[in-house]
Image (cartoon, rainbow, N blue to C red):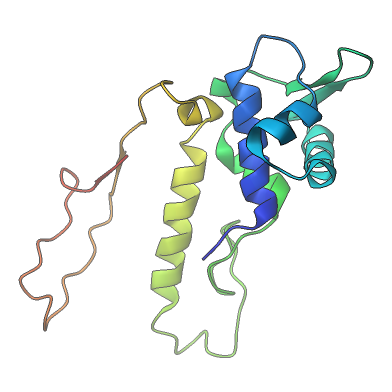
Length: 170
């Protein structure tokens, strides 16, 4: 699963604004130059983030954009919801937690996998703030797996089960 360029550029924009939080507005021209991003596309993304209330814009000679809140208050699920809309690894597992039915719903053996993938993405996005993305910022929080995955027979029979103490993601 891949996120779009819109999301990549939007996260880079938000990270740049987080790095400079409290220093006043910064122009998109400067961010585009520093991040080597296309200015017209960055303007579209910034406009979308502004309409969602994640950034504010200031007009004039010293205008530009800045975060609407502190970087510790903005979680990445907010940002990616604006930039991507509903994300789904498969039709049966949209990121909003709903279920879209397909013709194989009643006999599908893989839907549990796609829902677990969705839940992992949701957990990562909801527990990561912009402050976490700033180099030298707060240490990443530990996310612990609470649902052990079953051990499969066959070539993975000697695998170590994932437990709460061994499933640390950083």
